[in-house]
Image 1 (cartoon, chains in turn green, brown):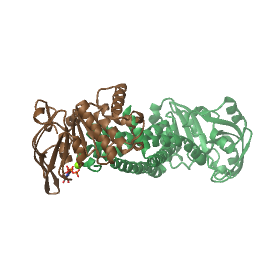
Image 2 (cartoon, chains in turn cyan, blue):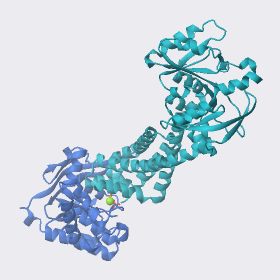
Image 3 (cartoon, rainbow over the protein chains, first blue to last red):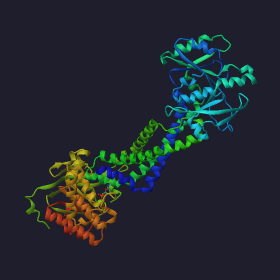
Image 4 (cartoon, rainbow over the protein chains, first blue to last red):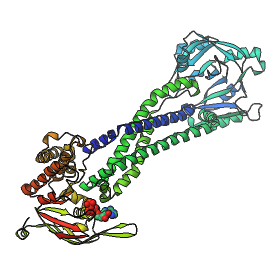
Length: 385
Length: 234
Ligand SMILES: Nc1ncnc2c1ncn2[C@@H]1O[C@H](COP(=O)(O)OP(=O)(O)OP(=O)(O)O)[C@@H](O)[C@H]1O
Ligand SMILES: [Mg+2]
């Protein structure tokens, strides 16, 4: 198509200007992609939460524990199918910078509640046979190059001492949004040690994970569980896993808002840059536009010419930026590791970025196109003649 | 000089009566054309002369439907173009007028052939037909070996010949040329004028040309002088 050819040749015409603008556009879209992905990564736990899992924790605060005896009573609540528990271990591996979640979990049905952790039966079995066994997510194993049978030593902080674990299993996430950076070991092993060094904390769990028959009853079941322990020494607060995860994210909401704002600022800046480029280009080409008009080309043609060129530049940059975002996110993910455990550019983010690129292209061409349509031939040709 | 009486039988292609045009510069009204009467017969080659700023381009623009008059009637090719909207005028220009500019006004990103094809995008022609017509026009101006050259690879004279090919490719009623030799050396200017003369003589094209050059005027059949807003036949 002749018009398309004209648009593309116009893009290539000011090679340096176009390539600088395309580069700027690519960088902006890359930043946009990564910032959006950061926000998503922040909410990854929320997104991955299962609707038929509830979390019961101490109503006062997560740092207070609950008695193990609650498990049987929770199990008695109608609709409850499974109850597992976990303790936050904390601890240090190498040094504080090497952060990843470490949790003591039980009972032996624990992994049944988490079908998103793909594990072989054999490994689960090995875990429950080996007193100090541990199961770790794929990403973490790759990062530290651990192998099955390796001993991993953690220095306790909440639970003092040197803790040696033997790697018996590696789980893979069922989807890309599954956190593959968690470290699980056995709660009964933890409790065994705690009995000796911190007897008062023995027989206590950090939180319960409650599986329910149907997500529709989450509200009633939560209420029923909390009612069981009302006015006891340790009241519970039960909520959906999603709400529980959200509670963590809410603490850092301000950062997320800031990241979001920055992502739009980046877009705003590049919009201005492209609009400026287009305005400059269109001004230089006024006599050409006037010539087109003289020959009888209508406003639609000129608008297509200008908007098309702007969109081509924007889209080229957008595609480049989105293309770069994948390896960049990968590299970034390796760097931040478990801080943002699920860090990959979702196709929706890519689609959004390309959509934003197109919108930038159109918006940037608005003023120049309007001007070109409005120029009076006699005056514009006057610049030439 | 064409004997006007012997041409009476032929059809008038431009009929202008009492044409007025003024421009506003700030609060001041600058009268440019003050009651122009002009009849141009089909198939004539008219030169429009006059001092700089006398309104030659303005008159040409009015006849070509690029600008509108303040008053007067303007019938071109049987159409009262003062009554047309901007969109109708654009369509009318595409169908009936070929333009030749002082600075050629070719599209730098298009080859000679593509430049000549440009006006045909507005006609109901397919790709092949457009190509054929454009090649024919380029052949006529003697540039078939230069069809794939870009304007910057052509001399001024060659560029103006491409522009002439572009002006004739859609077989317009009228060819408007505003100082077509103004930017050319003597020899190239001569070639361009000969070409215009040939188009007029051999193909019966009606040409209205603005020029400062008395030699250019000599090539034309009729010469009009525009001065202080009025037209004098010479
Ligand atoms: N768009 C415009 N706005 C205001 N004044 C204009 C405009 N176009 C032309 N004029 C004025 O109208 C007068 C006639 O201009 P025009 O361009 O028709 O002259 P010209 O005879 O073609 O001159 P030249 O030989 O220098 O090309 C001049 O005084 C010019 O300044
Ligand atoms: Mg002029």
